[in-house]
Length: 427
Image (cartoon, rainbow, N blue to C red; front, side, top):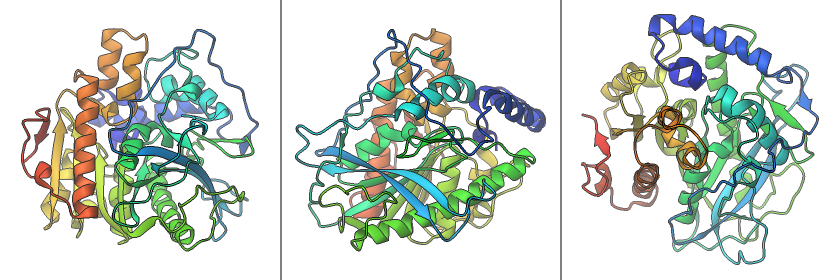
C-alpha cells in the first residue's frame, strides 16, 4: 500500500524494498514525534515567523457562500482503539455548508494554532515531504473564503445531500479544504473527518492536541487496523448526522449549531470521497455501510501492504465508485484493476495528466505560493498547471456527486471532454 506511506519515503522505491523502507520511515517518525506516544499534549503556540508568507486557498466556484462549524464528537459505546484506558472515542469533524448572511461574521481558520504549529514543525516537511522549512508558511492564517457559524442557506430542493471526506495518512482533515468548500458552495453539506491518534494532529476545543500514535507492530498490521478504525469512525459520524438532523446537538461541548443546520442534512443521500488512504477508506466504508450511495477514491490503493487484495477489490461494489489517479501511477494498478473486473455496475478510472500524488489535496493550491525550487515544486504537485488541476478536479468531483446524489446529467463522466483535456479515461 505504498500510497499510504510518508510520501517522501516512498518515491522511486522498488516494490521489493517497500517493507524495509516503510519500517525505516515509521522509525524516523518515532524520533520526530516525541509527543506521539503520549495522550494529549499541552497546547503549543504557532511557530510561524513574522516573515511567513500569507497563503490563500482558491475561492469556491459555486453559487453559495460557505459556512463552517467544528464538532467535537464522543462515542461512548467504544473505547479508543489507539489509547488503552481511554473509555471513549473522541473525534473532531468540520462541517461545511452553503451559507447566508455571512457579513460581519468571523472567518473560519484553516488550522487552529496548536495544530498549525505541529503541522509546520513536523507534518508538512517531515511527514508529507513538502520541502517547506518550518516557519515559512503561516498555516493558521491561510485564507479559506469560509465564514464560521453563518446561517445555512436553504437548499433549492429541500434538504442538502451530505458528502464525507477522509484525508490521507499523515494528512489532517484540513488538507482537503479546497474540495470540501467547493462542494459546499454548490449546495452540499461536507463533513471532513480527523481520525484521532492516526491523524498527524487534532486540536480539541479545550486547546489540547492529540498527535499520531505510532504502531507497535509491523506496517501491514498498522495499516489494516487504521483502515478498520476509519470505517468504524465513519459509521459513527453518519449516526451523529442522523442525530443532528433529528434535533439533537451532537457536539460534546454543547456549542450552538449554525441556524438552519438541524434538519437540513439529507441523510438518505450520502457520498464519500478521500485522498490516498482516505480514498481506500471511502471504498471500504461503502463496502461496510450501505448508507453511502457513491464514492470517490483519489489515488488510494485497494491492496494490502503485503500485496494481497482487499476484500472490496476481490468482490467489487454494488454502488458507483470513481477512481481518480495521478499520472504514471503504478502503485494502485493491481487493486484498481481487480476492483473494476469484479464490479459489474458503474465504475470509472481517470488519470490527471502531469499530476502527482498530492495534486488532489490543498498542496496543489498552496505549494505554488511558497518559495520552492522548480524541482521541489514538481516533486510535490507535478507539472500540470495548478489552476488547471484544481478546476479539473472540482469539475469531475462535483459532476460525479451531482449525478449520483442529485440525479443530474452524468455526461462529463462518460467520455473525454475537450473542456478538460488533462483528465484521461482509463479503459
